[in-house]
Length: 234
Length: 234
DNA sequence: CTATTAATTTAGATCCATCAAAAGCAGGTA
DNA sequence: TACCTGCTTTTGATGGATCTAAATTAATAG
Image (cartoon, rainbow over all chains, first blue to last red; front, side, top):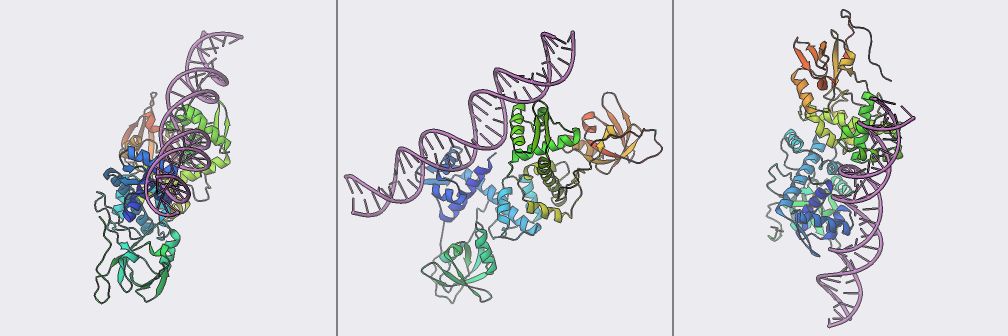
């Protein structure tokens, strides 16, 4: 019933909410979907009339429970398709995103379930993002942004990589930084450059735009001098 | 670049042309796509402006070479997806059509090629319809409508079954009439009922609407009393 | 040759998603 | 307080696909 556009908006809002939290502004959505702010305003208006968003003018929107369910369905289809493309059709992780974006709106529930079974109920897509199960429970688990989670000297495991920008992805894959990799933050420069050491001892300088897309779980460690502070969210 | 609707029209016109030949009338298209005649008129107008159809008002349309290429691309994707659904995801042949109709507009050329390779370059979809190869050569081969091809007493091999109506398909599958099956026409009643005998000796009465969807190739035989007349088309 | 009929086309309208340009609001600064 | 400045919203318009109702054309039966 929802159109492709509606699903795209819900998915984008979901993403932004789970990174930056509500309220989600018109310009954030416009940026994510490459639409003009005017277009976004009119769309969020209809979405909130349909009960998928709660909206406060000039402030922003937030998914309602119904909206979140709808968004999770799209996210589930998207990630399952990505996993399918990588595992069955030998796509590179950097190539799956666009194809999944196109297909996610047109696969049936039946198809989704069959793919899920074929892949034996995978937990995550090729970027490490968790795949919501059919009942749409366990909204997420995620991991925390690299710089927020790890102080210099601390180590962690890469949980996932944001899949928005193919170039960033490729950069990281080339650097050997993929889900499951252990990384140690060596230094965070004032101008945003994050230097990390991978398990094989190589050091890589990650520009801010790249580092922001790496999500990690802290290694439960002992020796380092980090404080116990972790980013938390409701 | 072509929209979903454009592809649907081209595919429908292609189908009708390859069964009944041009010109294809407004009402034939309207019937096939479940649209009003007025809608079809305006669409074929834009399609012929784009050089995909040649059109004569009040008479009908015919695919141009460019239109036929575009139509074959859609048909290729459709049938490949059907084959994929049946072979990889264990769909029943009766279930693949609708899913393929939705997906066919949104898979990339890359995806299509990868699926084709995964299935090892299949020649036909689950209904027996030939899959055009990537170069879009060999337009078709098909087979001939049951009653046109076989006089009572003659035998032939089922080449394919039209995949438009799931109920009809199911009926035929239940009767054991699927691509590859040998059938003998026992009788054609004046009111349209066609009685056939399958290889295992069972006889089935096929209503006209069902028989029209079975396409066969005549067995090169000797004993029977049939005349040498075959349906021919350019 | 005319009148009826069936199909086709035209005319006019709607809905959805989108945009550009203009107007409005809100928060910070002097 | 009064004023910028940067978002956001409003306004008005467009293109694509569709429909209903009315007008037109082609084919056929007298």
